[in-house]
Image (cartoon, rainbow, N blue to C red; front, side, top):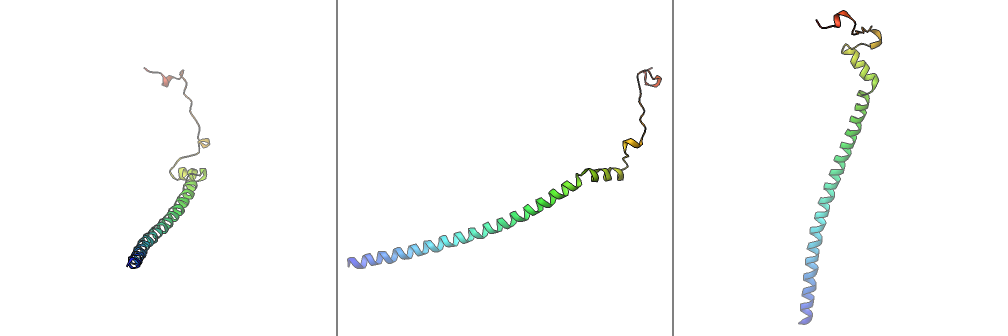
Amino acid sequence: MKHAVILGLFVLTAIVLSIVQIVFGTLYTTAGLEISQIQTQKQAVDKENMLLSEKLYTLSSLTNIEASAKQLGFEDETSKSMLVVTQNSAFALKP
């Protein structure tokens, strides 16, 4: 009888441990899939970040800024004359 109880406890322990192993195995598999999906999303964000950085460098280059300024009607300051007004000028005095 004592052997039967020990054998029963051993079988019960083996069944419980098997169930625990299945549960934790399922949890780890699910967590692994989530980690894989997050890593894929991170790679996509990293790629997008790299492309946006390149676009930023291109748009902020002096050559691009100069071309945009010309399209907006800005002119090179060396092509214009400058008028300097001093205090002695008649039109600069208050009445």
